[in-house]
Image (cartoon, rainbow, N blue to C red; front, top):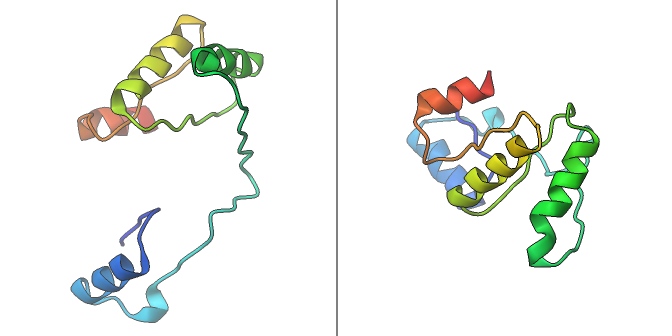
Length: 105
């Protein structure tokens, strides 16, 4: 079983060939998920964390994923949310697999 969220057609073809996967065993879906609410709220750079804290604090028990571009930012965002009482964890490729697995539980 191979799973990825970002494979280009060339990568899919490469994986298909390397792992001898038949074309009828490949599933490609779109990005839309009816069970997810994706929001973008424009704000000044200096207000991003305050905005996020306000939004998450309004419903702290709801599952929430915050996408960031750097591991350090993930750590900073998690610390800020924890500081306001939200059960938050950073999750990124720089963590040991055991730690990531524990967070997923």
